[in-house]
Length: 143
Image (cartoon, rainbow, N blue to C red):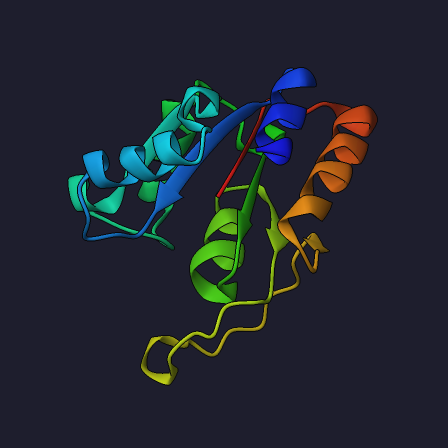
């Protein structure tokens, strides 16, 4: 909640792009339970789309969901180098990597990417995004 509230206080939209088989209602129920649903400006769940991350069209749908036309004014936060960091950077977004997920071996993809930032906790994302926003402005951040 502090991350989403901090982004909103700075005028930065919050979006969600999730590779998932679960329906929108499932995710909204979790966000509602956690008290952050009202802080999500747009969401894309790949259970509703023809493509998922890292496909450029998935990221384009997420940008559209939060009303951002220029990918360079958006940041994507994720835990997977291929799906999240590579996928976001290919469309021109900045990418923050949170390297804490235990990704099963069969889902790992060998890729050499350099995230724009690496944080050890989700709470660190706000400081990174606010610093970038102060430098050149941002419209949206999402995961």
